[in-house]
Amino acid sequence: MAEHIRGAGSRIKVSISASYTAIEQQTEFTPPSTPHELIETTELGATAIGRDPTIPGGGEASVSFNVETAGTAQAYLRTNLNTPPAAADSFKTYKADNTTVVHTFSAWITNIEYEPVNPKAIWKARATLGVTGAIS
Amino acid sequence: MSAAGDLAHYLADRVPELEGRVYPLLGRQGEPHPCLIYQQDSDEPGYELAGDAGYSELQLSYTVWSDDYTQCERVLDQVRLVLEAVADRTIGDTPIDVVLADGGEADGVEIIDGAATGRLSKSQAFFVRYFRPAALAPGV
Figure 1 (tube, each protein chain N blue to C red):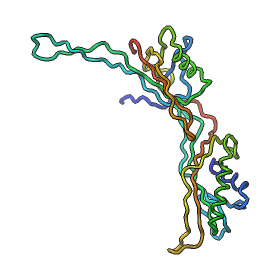
Figure 2 (figure 1 turned 60 degrees about the vertical axis):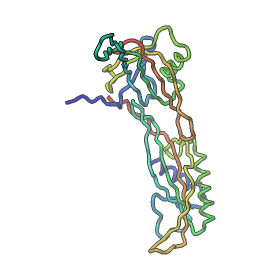
Figure 3 (figure 1 turned 90 degrees about the horizontal axis):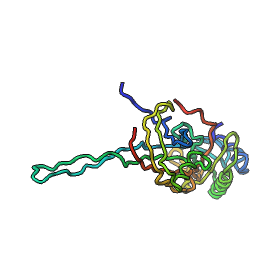
Figure 4 (figure 1 turned 180 degrees about the vertical axis):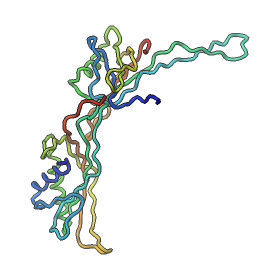
């Protein structure tokens, strides 16, 4: 039977002091992508345009969550957005069993964007993660 | 009891002109007026990836029926004032987060066999967010 990875129960975690911690109240995440460009390699005298791929990388991941000001991982993301650490943070995505890792990657927190706050809303935000290096 | 039911009991106790006449969906035949009919239009639970987010968002409609239009207006105003004051309070078994009047008021008349009976109504929808029992452990 084909594999179906269930969304409910899946999660993204960030490494805090060598321990992976789930971002609190996460409602949605987008796993990292690995885009790469094609560059032209056409030589003089060629009869067709040649193109080769660059090395992959430079994509983004994101996680949306209900804002929990006291949440350890949410506070960690905010801190590292405002004061980038010496090295990019480590992230993992997990299947719903909370054990099986799907992606492992490093990223910088490049933005935390809040949704508009209105009388009916609860506060929600989305953190954007700029991926660096390989994704495994 | 449901959130809608808890709010109905609360309103029955706090809007004196209703004298307890608060019913779900349908009024009672021969019942004196005014009376308040409530209807749950939707109840949408909040979810996180880990499971239940612990809250639910409810859409409720309230309709006041009376022979007197001014009484319809007056009672519906009282209903709105009572509901908008329940934010951050536990009503019956239901911890309420916020209640907001949602959209405008609407008028109506009772028609039976093609003829107006003289019963008039005024309706208002409300948005309610309430907290549900503690979430279960995330599913695996």
